Length: 448
Image (cartoon, rainbow, N blue to C red; front, side):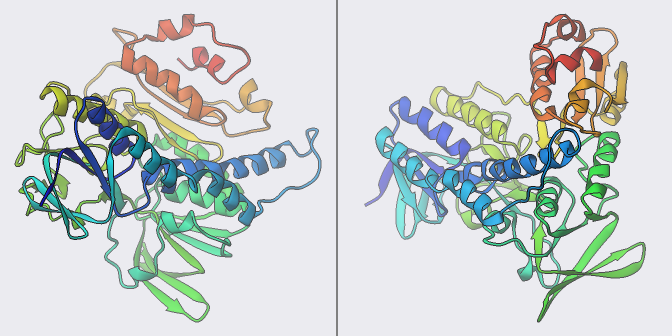
């Protein structure tokens, strides 16, 4: 006998939670399936626990910057205690989420799901029949395809370290490498970043990344760009990472190697062929409504869909779109305008909207204002020398096309630029706004 549902959701993260809740509120019968603890990447293995650890890093950095400016003494990161602080948040999440499902009348299954037909999935030998399926399984680290890859830890592993090793090597130069190398260096480890590309943080403005790299230097982080890792070798003292840069071989010793070379939709275990679900370029082939083009019973949301930026707010947005289309028929389309992105280095670097190169490629007419401004009060009061911005304003309309910030409070201020982009506010609108002073937001008028 089959267990039959209106909707079976694969995954239990942000997208899964939003969509399952909305379907249940519409009186649908709903099941969720996940082989990992309920809660998803953001709450358990990503944004939230990472930011908990960054809190300790921020405190240490603040004291060090203010030394000689009225603050005395030394501080350090107590790694086990910081991890315990993180677990005070992540530990209860799976149980709380499972309780929410029970309270909502959603059936929750622990196990690895795979399709057995266009409208059936199996979970540990139990078959579920679904009128619709939502794929919300998140993302996984991209395969490195190097010898010794089995010795490379994931960001998940890093977030569960009981003790921080003395030497940490990061393969890749994106968010994970930038954020975790800052944390590791401030906690006392020797951090090395091996990045295949010509610079770190390729999704952010190159000028601002250049300013931020001064902090990498301050922390003693060894950043090697245009460097390709070829293999990892285990030794009796740890590991050796073998790489090539400029035609020359180099070797880096490590006690821990962390994968930070990007992620892809986590779809491999689902047996999509059995479900009649087509991939294109390793991603689900979806229409504009986040619906599978080959199996109309199936929708996708979040990182698994790969439709928008791989960010938690996008997962929530996708889930609302997918749920609306499931419940009322296809009519809603995702809208990714004005979604900010932040790398939580200390200080943070942010971006929203178009980059300068992209705006020029589109042939848009715009004015650019860009400056490194450590002399501004926002930076001076914190003894922070890394503070700068770049904004793009369309000539004819005055609309904000893009904004890029690095420095204190950038992770909060960027949201106001995102608001402007999404809702069509102009530079004049922002200039006329009376922000509380002195705050990071009160600098906006001078940035445009």
